[in-house]
Amino acid sequence: MRKVGVIGAGLTLFRRRMLETPQELAYIAASRALDEAGLELKDIDCVVIGSAPDAFDGVHMKGEYLAKAGGEKKMVSRVYVGGATGVMTAISAWYHVASGLCEKVLAIAEEKMSPARPHPQSVFKYIWDPITEKPLNPNLIWIFAMEMHRYMAKYGIRKEEIALVSVKNKRNAMNNPYAQLPGNITVDDVLKSEVLVWPVQLLDVSPTSDGAAAMVVATEDVVRRYTDTPVWIEGVGWTLDNTSWPGRELAYPRYLENAARMAYKMAKIERPYKEIDVVEPYDPFDYKELHHLEGLMIAKKGEAPTLLKEGVFDIDGDIPSSPSGGLLGVGNPIAAAGLMKTISIYWQLKGIAGKMQVKKPVHTGVAQAWGDLMQASTVIVMRN
Image (cartoon, rainbow, N blue to C red; front, side, top):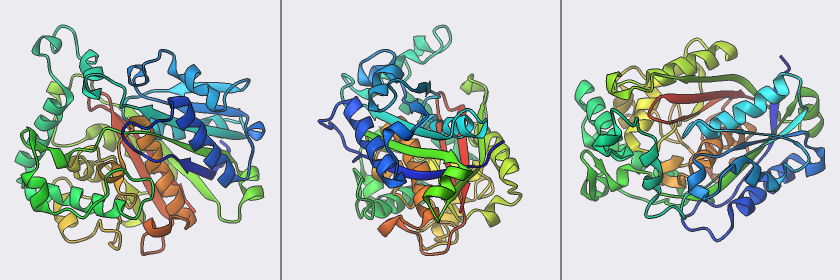
């Protein structure tokens, strides 16, 4: 396989009810990524588009629809694995280059959730098994409440400990110019916020968002021609667990451990808690950041809350986690959110993260996303 690196990235603001169309959001992010790379659209060989359910944007065949952002008359493909799509978009761009098919790939992820009526949650009513689940009329927050409750019960974790993730990520987001919900909040604010489905409360959850992200991925020759500070994609992993979630152990994300082991093997990482300098775990809910830090094997099962309390995951800690502010602080336009996490690691390793830059030297970073009915996971390892 060919060595693959990243040479440019761009984001739009993450906000609710953005006035731009989905195509315009994708174009803005793509233009910014090309500008950072020092390339023009005519230099790009292939385009990979990532987007979650078509119903959010209200159009079918969304890959073709979004291709107006740069894909016309080029080789275009769309990837979709639910919430794991954003990191999968970067992984797909990687294998377009690693395989020898393309030299320069533009990866774009977009989501415009605001138009969904009466609420974006309504889009998910079609994901359930029609025989065993649909008659119960479930929604996703029910399911995540069960998972959060199981995680707390299995390891004796208190709500106060989980709320520290929201406090940390919203504080980190104050350094992020693209962020939707930055803020200095307290554990008490989280515990007093509206109960949605116990134990999930309003400030445990990321917001509804619109936004786009884009990244330029290229061969080693191209990367060395355009930058003196290369960042390489050194490991990728993606797996599906059993879609029958009621039969799984919800206290531990096995789907993620499997994907992480694939990526670590490729990147020759044997002790992730010692070898990873900065991490962007997927955090649509605050408990999921802790859950995913354990699935990534950066913390032992049930021990992530203790490390969080000790400051290990702070921006000046031993392993900064979500220095971007994560989905809780930056926003959660689903596919774009995962690519935003990948871009955050790229900017950290390149040393251009501005006020988001972590306080210690970083050489190895990991981004991760998760989706579908809690069974899809994608992991990417990058180094400078």
